[in-house]
Image 1: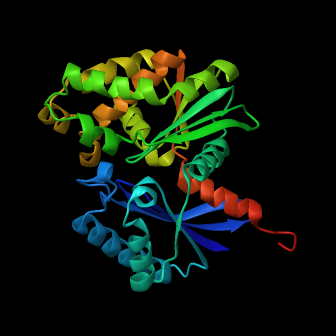
Image 2 (image 1 turned 45 degrees about the vertical axis):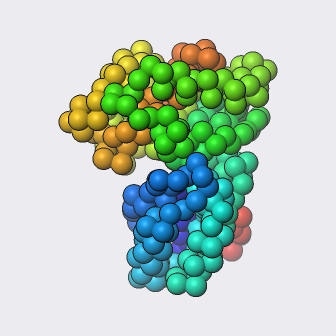
Image 3 (image 1 turned 90 degrees about the vertical axis):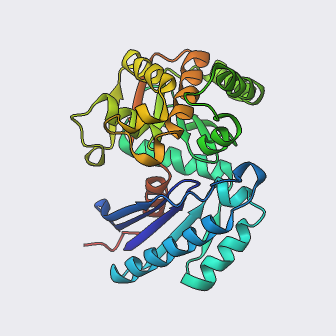
Length: 309
């Protein structure tokens, strides 16, 4: 069965097309577009007109590819930017009207569950772990064992939200960093309590910013050819310190740092540092599988291949 998953993220829209069969998931095509749906007013819960139009145009282009690839089933999943925007349902309605694509606006808990399914499919979970997925609008945390999800929660502390609220200096100032940390202290008490109970040993970063960290740390690896990688925490901390101390111009010149993440990577580094230090994690891995692959593997599990040859 040929299926497609569209992930309507706060920063980027992703399209992935795959065949599902008794053999598993075979990815045929994938692309992404930096739509920046959360541009300008994400903390006011508004999709501004320019971002609204970029989103519609991107979905129109995706629709052409869906028809070209003769996709049989489409799951279009909207996350933080759409679910929190006052005009998010208007965007979903316009998308349906102009493209025929039906958008599902999922909760943060549903988002976290899909992320877990994606990460689990890589085989990277070897011990009790804390999965972290830094989006533009929200960040999801999942505590899991090798076999099962133990705890999950989505927080509205995505990189775009924190950047618009706090990141106004070049480089980021100590006062701005302290403001972010104060916000994290006020919001993440339940996460810390859950970690104290379940004792995760490893931080698993799901795609996004963690792919950028990995590309900068392991520059001989093509990220799009792997499903997971181990990272050295000490090397990560050295890179993080460099990113946080850098100017915008400095980061523009850094290899393997894509333009979309040139500024948001600073916020991602502050967030990741906070989690590593507060939870006391001393090992770290990347999963390139995230929500999109989680949806694909959920669809796979729902298929009946009893009659497959």
